[in-house]
Length: 423
Image 1: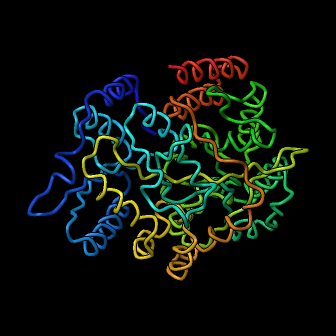
Image 2: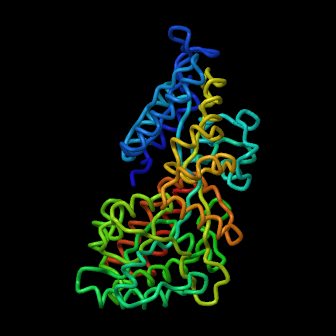
């Protein structure tokens, strides 16, 4: 994933001094008697079409407001956002993700939305994940979880049974995946895997450790090394492919082994289940992640898929707030966007759109309900977390490709990560 590089982070430092909003005052920026609100977001062509439909629905209900969508692909989104902000052209409404919340809030870029957007019907625990130092800088668009996804048909074709996900261990998972690979005639792997920090966060939670603690890395070197040992065991037992193949297929949903029927298991965000199922042309299901021996929890957690935020410098705050309120509270918006930005946390919206959800999304909704009593708390990462995925990937690849020992790589990861977090 593209992250904010050092130069871009420096650019962010200038935001509070230079940004002056997205054009004119009060409910300024009016054209033809209408207030124009710029809304920045990233995603696929499909997301763009859904968003444009939601914008049209909002404008129909609010004929004095024009929403101008400022769409980017993921790779260029944050660099573009930082540049616009530093140039005094910050979008009025901005999409950001959890890794960037503390960064943007800390630079004075975001408005405190407490009491500005109706949050009564939103999941209050999830809502807290939009807070930094007690201020509500962000409204979650919806939630995801990071489960194990399984193609039951592939498991059963190999003559095996889908495990009980309330009790299976990492050893059970690897042994089962190895058997499936052996019976796959060289066409099917037991599992694919990835290096997403969510995977390590979950694995660490099983050991009672947090990814972040007191603004720094909360992981022990031993837990990081044991996680790498787990990945190495998947490779060495041929439960899954080697690091080179996963480097090619492990980052994009449409290239996922699950999406091409070349794997029985794999871990992806829950809102990717529909795309994976569509690619496979088969039903896929969600399971809790396996546990470490002796663990009392699978470490599952909910995370905002992304947030809606409003520029602290906007001079069109009322119109921007109405738009955000519409996106998270209006069943019409929910019926258009569905689970594209995560499963809605507004219970009334979920009830209204339930029948419109795809079969895969229905499974996600049921799965999230089934694990709610087991969830680890949502933690907003500290400033600098935008770079964490790249730092972790470099360290992980150095181990999996045999370029560094686990001891050296773990020390290097913690040192580099903490240096980034304390900038």
